[in-house]
Image (tube, rainbow, N blue to C red; front, side):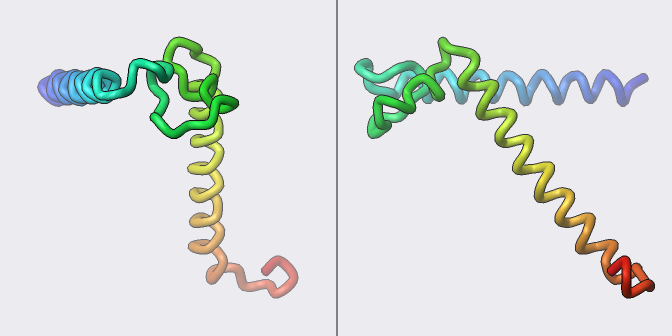
Length: 90
């Protein structure tokens, strides 16, 4: 029971930190750019980082998840490869 409440407290602390980080990064940006975009971004990519347009964030999250899954599958393959005995399967 105590472990679950401790996990919730840690999750709240992490979420609070992330929220403060996002707020401070948005405040330091130039007013002429979209919220969430950097200063030197080409205009055709502004819709991908704009925090008011949620679909850009979803596209980036899916791309990031795909990259992480690819790295994980490569790691699993490299770890399991020495244990395969049959040359045909190797």
